[in-house]
Image (cartoon, rainbow, N blue to C red; front, side, top):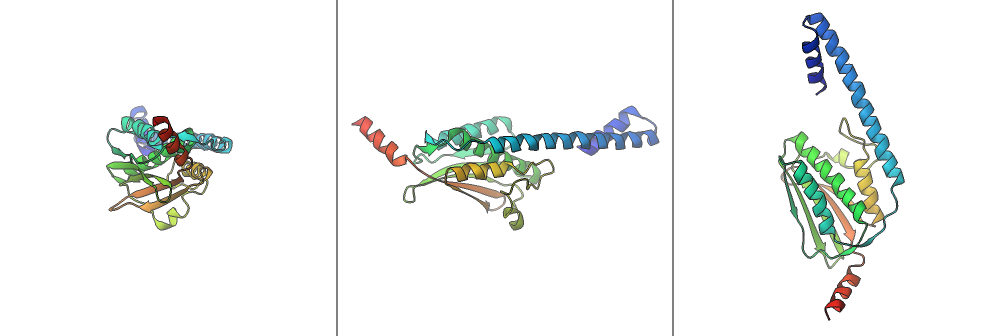
Length: 219
């Protein structure tokens, strides 16, 4: 995009080749400076948000509804990508911070959509499932982008680490913090046949109490 901006600036303003070349160089430097300032501002904003992030305030909530809201936002904004959502109806209402988990889902969706755009993919699949035996609820966000190498996987959740030119390196760090505040885990895996899967595992705290309350209210 920077090169296109520079070429247009030179072509439109200066018909003379020498002047056009100078204009292109100046325009390229200007755009780079503007873009750098934008990235820096974004980093400051995200760091401030990360630093001010309150502790999780879990309350009985429906993870399927939370994830569904995040998916709807991205389906509307990215019509060219096939974004699917398969909620497990067995997922119980359990204690979670609705706003924080929604932010985490949005960050993972943003990461997946960018991977699809950059890697020539076509789809992002979001799903939930409930392991009643272990008392764990999973949220999975998978894409068919280019995938992530093993060495990068080991650093994905480090603050300020990013493989993107305009990345702040805080998006996945924020997700990791949110999941940790819920006493859960987040893992990154290869998606088959291509792409990446992020798997969040959360303890379904309070689910038993919600089931009991539901049964009592129907008696």
